[in-house]
Image 1 (tube, helix red, strand yellow):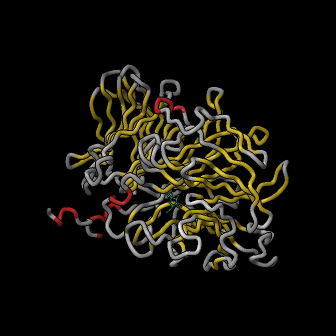
Image 2: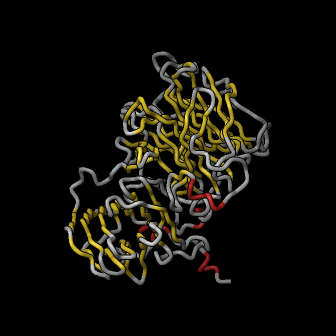
Image 3: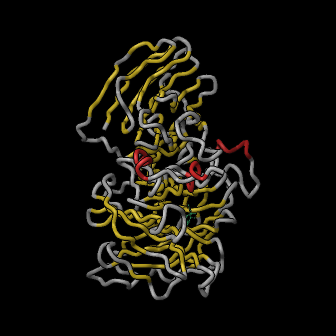
Length: 504
Ligand code: FRU
């Protein structure tokens, strides 16, 4: 065996993959976003973090802060693990009225609700239960609540609490959504003080159940901005068993009356897996690398913004970046729209190029002959907007990150109406057998047109199709020279409506 070829690449050799505008921790391992909360002009991003190495373990909450959701500054580890517990995923709330009594009326606390993953050394060995930590200095330092855990079901798989303030027909109280991961259930609880919790209801199993359910979220959104016509959105991340293989996020739309969530998007019920129906479920993203997505609490402007971990448990431990491992997705504002009579989720990235004075390139309307139209832009960190009319052509699309015999391809195929993201030849793909892949989502054309917004950031491709009605997110690890960009058509009859590229 040749040990040289199996060793992790060095930091220098792989730092070209470090994104510019996606959060990575300076060094070491990162997974789920945790405790997303806004307070007094600052967005807080806590996250699953191993402070001691580039692999999963010693799970603690790392911390970063930002004034704008795009420029993040790493902070000291917020909640470290100890010999008794790993600090697994959870959420944070601003306890404005000091319902918990963990602060004072003058200094209300930030309260983190996290999963204690108890070690063999702990009295509750092997269990997962929900615990609190609080901060009286706007998230800088944290103290674990002495009465932990606050919610224990004597379960080994009860985790990922997301807490929000419910104010509706049934009253006003804190609601927790968490999972019984292996049973594929979301469990709902209520509390007046974040410390004592009462069971409300249980949802699931339903729709995708091919893996454990993790990291749920529940929030209400107006349809087309109309508050009189709203839906509750239940987010359930699943691993494996996602639409593109491995980890993914699914969502249900329905009603929440303060007690139970009633889904109107249940296609299949129970633990039976019906692979033929997977495409009928609601998916947050149809790519391979958008997982554990949850939303911010206490947002200043009523916006609902989510962040996902841009990786997949299938190969996250193997991704070829030395020293640091894994990035967060771009933050995404989610909303609901009615399209052809059906309510659907729409996602729009918080745009890192907005307001920036960047180099740009534009192509106007023109016929696209069969073949390739090279774009004179060197894009490894870029935003690409393209509008295409396939016309009679069987396929149209973009070739990204091309060079050194490598390429990543976004292709629309008229025969089946599917948009595909193909990373089989995207560069370094052989670190895991499931990494080379082609992802696909059905995308109806609008007046014969396909509109794509694509963000590239060194090791990622995020595609927002038809104004964010479908998204595809994939990691790629191309050669440094792989920056060429082109538009292509296969067969005659296609037209380019417009292409806009801004690069950093
Ligand atoms: C999801 C997850 C969570 C858990 C955490 C542990 O990726 O498995 O369910 O709390 O990661 O790091």
